[in-house]
Structure formats: C-alpha cells, structure tokens
Amino acid sequence: MSDHPVEYHAGKKIHVGQGEHHITADPDVMLTTILGSCVALCLRDPRTGIGGMNHFLLPEGAGAGTDAGRRYGAYAMELLINDCLKMGARRDRLEAKLFGGGRMFDSLRDVGASNADFAEKFMRDEGIAVVGGSLRGSGGRRVQYWPATGRALQRAVTDTQIPAPAPIVRPRIAVDAGALELF
Image 1 (cartoon, rainbow, N blue to C red):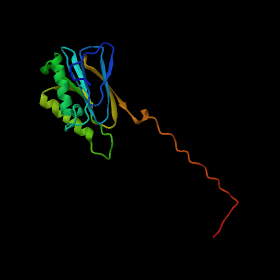
Image 2 (cartoon, one colour):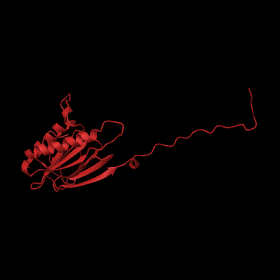
Image 3 (cartoon, helix red, strand yellow):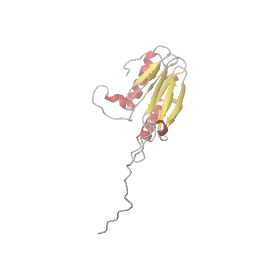
C-alpha cells in the first residue's frame, strides 16, 4: 500500500490489491489487478506520463482503523488523484479508464453495479474525462495498465480458469441377484 507518491524501477509489474493504489511515471511499469465486483480507476496525465491505479471494494462507508477507508471508492479516488497531482500531474489534463463492477452472483445485491455507478458519477463530478475501460457485465477480469502511455489490456477471468472439483466417486453396491427376501 502506498501512502505517498511512489516511483518504481523499470521493468516492474506491480499488483494492485484491494484497498491499494500505486502511481508512477516510469514507462516500463505495468500495474495489474484482478476485479470482480470491485472497480479500478486507471488514471494518468498524458503530457507528463504520471499515472496510476487504485482498487476499491465498495462505493462509500465508514471504517475502523487507519487503513479501513482505503477499501471505499470515495477515499481511494481521492488518494490516487491527489498522489498523481503531488507527483506533477495536472488536474485539467487527467484522463481515466474504469474497469470492473461485474455482477458476481445472481442471488445477491448487485454490488458491482453500485461500484460502477459510483465511479462514473465521481469522474463526472470531478470533471475528469473517462476515455475507456469496461464496467459491469458478469464475472471477473484481469486488468493490465501502463500509466505512462495509457495502454490497458483486459482479460476475462472465467470459471474454466478455476480448477474443476474432483468428480464424486460413489462406491458400487454389490447386489446378490439370487437372494430374495419376502415379508
């Protein structure tokens, strides 16, 4: 987790976990995350190449402890934007790509849609252009993002990538074909 702007060395792949954010201006750094109903904001200043990614679980909420707020979109968005600005990005040039917000279970409340709605509204309210991404849908996705160039790749994470459970083997019951018992 990053509390301050962080610069990473060339050639690094950085995984952004739930409640985390990372920023860089290094063109060799690729940020990656895996999303279900969570949302990731990929943000950059195209002129300076400064940018980053966050990963939040829920739109808003109150948390206990010093890092609890990181899992909420309102806090995660502010952290990423402010750290990009501290590093030299300009607010009027920021552009965003939003990913995630998938519907993961049919029987539960659609948390993914709430996350996606929140992220879109937040960007509108902040006046930050959304230039790409992929929100909503069903299932998970893996996102790779190069902040310096704005390049983003998304791959679906499907059930076929999860090992299937071992088949259930039922013991055979021997049947004595010659015996008959009547009551």
